[in-house]
Image (tube, rainbow over all chains, first blue to last red; front, side):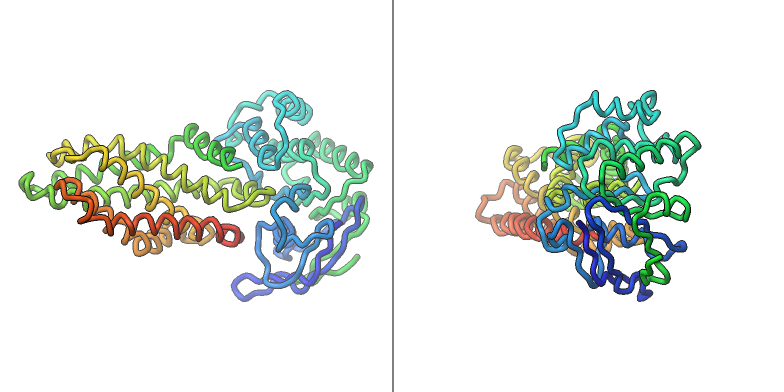
Length: 211
Length: 220
C-alpha cells in the first residue's frame, strides 16, 4: 500500500528526517511516535505531498507519489493538527468543498447526518472560526468518515477531545481497523499505540526506529 | 474543478468581504491623497492621471492578493487544496481569475471618485479604455498571483510580496500608463500597440509559468 524509502528533510540546515524508510501493507495500521520536534508531522505532510523533501521516494499503491498524476492521491487522506478548512465557511460548506475537491458528490443530508453523529448538528451552519479545538477534531472525524480513502494519515487524532470525543474517536478508529482500512497515525500515548498499531515506529532525532 | 475552486474564492470573499472592502477603502484613501496633494490645473493633471491610476491599482492589488493568500494560512486551509487530488495549476488559475474579478470590481467602484476628485475628463474612447483595462487587470493579477503564491510560505510574506512584485510588475504598469494616456489623448492604435503587446506577452508568459510551476511553489 505504502512504501517510504530514504526520505530526508532539513529545516535551516538542521536535519529533521534522515533516510526514513518504512512500508505499510493494506489493512495495517502504523503508529509513529516520538518527542516533540522529532519530525512526525513533517513525515506525514511529505507523504501527503504538502511538504517537499530533499531526497527519497514514496510509492502509494505502487505509484510514485512525487512524479505521478494528482489523481494518485485520490484515495490518500491527510488529516493534520489544523482543521485545513476555511474559517469563514460553515461545517457543511467546508465539507461540501472538501468532498468536491476529491471528486466525491457531496450529499447535504449525508453530511448533516455525520455532523449529527459527531455532535455538531446544532452548529452545522455556523462558521468554523467559532468552533473549539474539540469541535474541530470532531469535524475532521466527520470528514474522514465521508471521504472514500484507502490510506488515512492522521496526525494526533485525540488532541483537544473531551471524554465523549475520545470515545467517538476510539469507536471510529476501531471500526476502521475492523473494516481492514490502512492508517498511518501519529500518537503520543503508548497504550493507544499498542491498541491500534500493527507496527509502532519511533522517530528519534530524525532516525526511524522500530519498537 | 476550476469552477469549484473559483466558486470557493468568490464565496469566501462574499462571506468576509475582506478583500474588496480593504481594496476599496485603500484605493479611496490614495485617490484623496492624490487629489489634495496635486494642486495643479486639469490640463496638467491629465498627463499624470494614467500613472496615478495604475499606481493606485498596484497598491490595492498588493492588499488584495496578500489577503487572498492570507486566509489560506488560517487553520492551514491551503493544505485542503494542495493535498486534494487536483492539478495545482488550477489553484493558480482560480486565484488569478478571482483576483482579476475583485480588481475589476474595485476599479469600477473607484473609477468615478478618481475622475471626479482629480477633475479629469472621461476617456475619449470609453470602450477601448474598458477593453485594455481588462487586459491590464489580467496582466497585473497573473504576476501578483504567482508572486503571492511564492511569498505566502515565507515568514515575512507581507514584506516579501511588494519587494518581489513591484519590479516584476513594473513593465505592466509602465505599459498600462502609456496605453491609458494614449487612449485619453485619442491617439491612433499604431502609436501604442507595442505597449499592448507587452501586456499580452506578460499574460501568456506568467500564465504558463504560474500554471506549470504552482505545483512546486505551493509545497512547503
